[in-house]
Amino acid sequence: MVAGINLTSPKSTLLPNHSSSGESNATAFLGGSPLNGLSFQLKPKVIKNVNLVVASGKAISSTSGSSGGRFYFNITGFPFPLGPFLNRRTIRTEAVKDSIWLFEQEQALGFSSVSTNIRMTVIKLKSGGLWVHAPIAPTKECIELVKELGAPVEYIVLPTFAYEHKIFVGPFSRKFPQAQVWVAPRQWSWPLNLPLEFFGIFRAKTLKDDDTSTPWADEIEQKVLSCPEVGIGPYVEVAFYHKRSRTLLVTDAVIFVPRQPPECISKESLLASAKNGLAVKVLSKGKEVPNEPVVDDNKNRQKGWERMVLQILFLGPSNLLEPNASFAQMSQKLIVSPIVKTLVFSKVPEKASSKFSAELH
Image 1 (cartoon, rainbow, N blue to C red):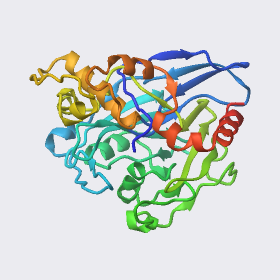
Image 2 (cartoon, one colour; image 1 turned 90 degrees about the horizontal axis):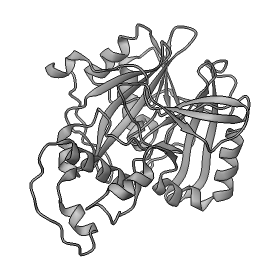
Image 3 (cartoon, one colour; image 1 turned 30 degrees about the vertical axis):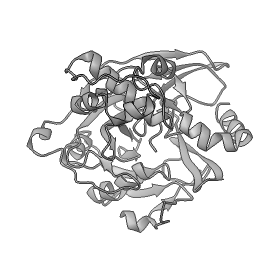
Image 4 (cartoon, one colour; image 1 turned 60 degrees about the vertical axis):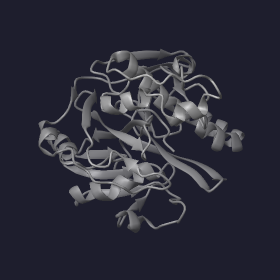
């Protein structure tokens, strides 16, 4: 399951959120997976105004992409392998000047026409080293964009149990063998509960709740968000609060759906999703589905993105034929993914409510 939306924008965009109250101003931006990852300001006071930073600065893609720098072979994943299987473009955006960068790639669900963006966040520490949150596929292009920051990677952090993030930690860490690897507690996998070593993750240290002994504790606080087993395993992720930029990073607990498709998603994927294929016909509940060619224009690319979002966020959406109205209700605001809300938080509503309430004060 892909939860949490990442977004990219060539310009810095601030979106007010008036749902919180208190005394301090806040800055927020997403950082994490396909609809994935979030960051927003917390502590030391109750939040008064939260501004969501969609992206800040100029989006950059390495020139190595045209010469094989985007090649990455991956056919693993259950029940669906995670694509693209051979080629992944990386987009880097500076979110906080000289301090925080967002790296995004397209991620597809198996052989379907559903893609979204997956995000890695990089923070520069006072030591001059880099702290990497939720690594993405370490293509040549991606690694070049990291090295262009001119600082060594000191820490690599897996903030969740989720396979779509776990699968890249081992390969990414091998590109930076001197870096320490830290992982969220209570790791598990399905259908077989495999050890981290199976994923190429060795000598990893475990993230702990409110741990003040981590090497980054004076700059980045952490909080474990965990629910008891719901279905096949527990929901676990670790939220981080970067004090200097007053930014909170989460992975799938809260998401932001951008109105426009992220830059990292290819036009081919968007247009494939805009076609009235089998999924649209099956989920249209008897409505007539026209079989017409899809031309490459902004309208069809947008329709493709809207269909992707609904299929990622809902179990069997019934409005894929004309997705605009449903999409409009989900986009341009902070939400809990309906799938996560249904499968996880609804099972333990009091625990989920108290956990987030405590974090926001």
